[in-house]
Length: 236
Image (tube, rainbow, N blue to C red; front, side, top):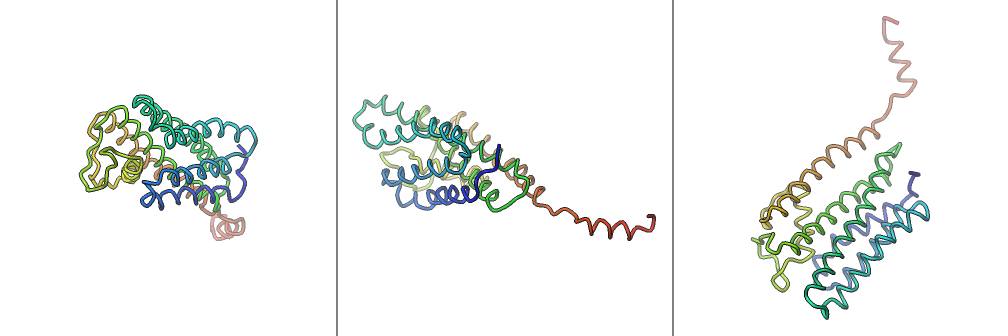
């Protein structure tokens, strides 16, 4: 895989960070939130598409996600409940597939980077955020398929008595960081299994990927230092 073009991951990181900052203030404004997600869609492709094929593959996953999201906003309320449920599940599934594609591309870029520069650092941070967002979508799918999979102990607002995307986003990052506040509790085996897997993912991400970056970043001894070391050895 050729090196990504410079500064693309900076734009991706900026959009991912923006959704984490603004969602508490816009969670009732679905159109604005999905506008931000659209920006994430295109900056993600901008970050990883080093050729036309990669860009087209990204669109293959991204456009159905965008279409399903738009349908949820403008059409789903007129559908039968089962159709609306299927649309929400499909939207979450295709978003996970899209983010997995972006994440794998970023991961390959990070592990193959010969040196650690600013773009590699932003790629690593963006990858961590994408994992958290994708896992939030997984939690949402579990709740859609198995209602009552989570218990809310804190006074966080519930719209229409149900969990929404921002609840699962919060729960995902609390889990991947192993904070364990306990205000949202997984109840079903399916939800508990996902929590275990995400906690393990967060731990291994830090242990393996960060150590990889540190290993690449570690300065190598210069030839002059090596010669000085040899000269100082009385056995030579």
